[in-house]
Amino acid sequence: MSKRISKQEMEHALRQFGLKFDEFDVALLDAGHINGTYHVTLKKNGAVAGEYVLQCINTYVFRYPELMMNNIARVTEHLETKLLEQGINPKRRVLHFLRNANGNNYTYGEKGHFWRCYRFVDHARTYNQVTDPTMLESAGRGFGEFQKLLADFPMDTLVETIPDFHNTKLRLRSFFKMVEEDPLGRVKSTRTEIEFFQTRKQLSSRLVDQQNAGILPLRVTHNDTKYNNILIDDDTHEAICVLDLDTVMPGLAAYDFGDAIRFAACTAAEDEKDLSKVSLDLELFEAFTRGFIGGAQGFFTESEIESMAWGARIMTTELAARFLLDYLSGDRYFKTEYPGHNLDRARAQIRLVEDMEKKFKTMQEIVRQYA
Image (cartoon, rainbow, N blue to C red; front, side):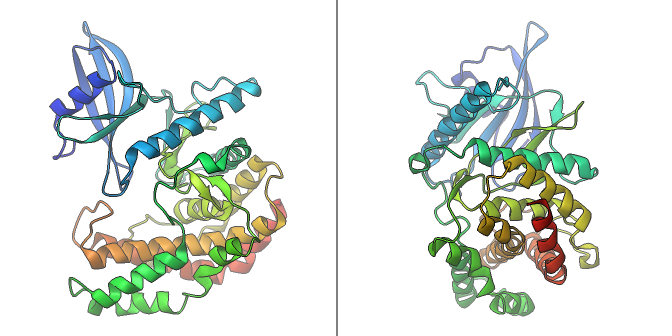
């Protein structure tokens, strides 16, 4: 478990959610870059009394966590309603967050930490790497269905948990501002990487400009569609439940498509140091595309279809800039495991963009094929 969080703090948080137990086991779930996430197994009278996922929210990243949890409450209630209308039991399909004595789906701990807790979904798991294209297609279908289920959600009730989260134009503006400030003197060792962003500044604003021009419609989007943010059933290998709803807010369909491709269709890990291993796997790209567009069932407009491949390039460029900005500013945002971790991440994403540029026409043709 995290060195910052004691088991005593976790126990206090669990009891705030009304859980009854004599003892509990805890295991760190460490796939994410932001929050502290733990699998908790409660025990009472020597027997298992329940399994839950307990999360300590990073309030440096999420400055208004109560508003974020209000978003999540509305979205999960809407998803449950839509599934019930289709005759589908939502128990394993939608996250169920516990509430404390005040009726909130969150609580504050003894040391001021912000906690939430939801029921653990058994006989299902997440994956950090794709081993089966069929499972990736299912994940794509799950994310596509997620957007379609939220098609009639009242978008104006959502708060932006991280304003301008995927506004690539502003992201790059912040990046170049950090380059000018260079607080830790790290710019001199990253000149090649900085040049990469300078030569792609205009192209990276394409989606934002099209949104502002009314070409691309706003949707309720997930905005963090990594392969490990959807649960896959152990038996059927079907995607059953979308996780990590912190950034559900108005956005573009291309954001969700592009971020998923960036993570799942890459031939190497997000922080691979050997850049010769980093490329776009077109078979995996096609598998996710088939699932995502099929899951949305004709929901997307023609302009959105044309934006999908651009979304992959631009989301990868954006994250590369975010990783490098964090490196230049002292690694304050993303969790790191060693000095230079964010720089390695940035370089891997840059290489992936370069490979996408070489394969871009094929990417566009694949998207049009399934549209």
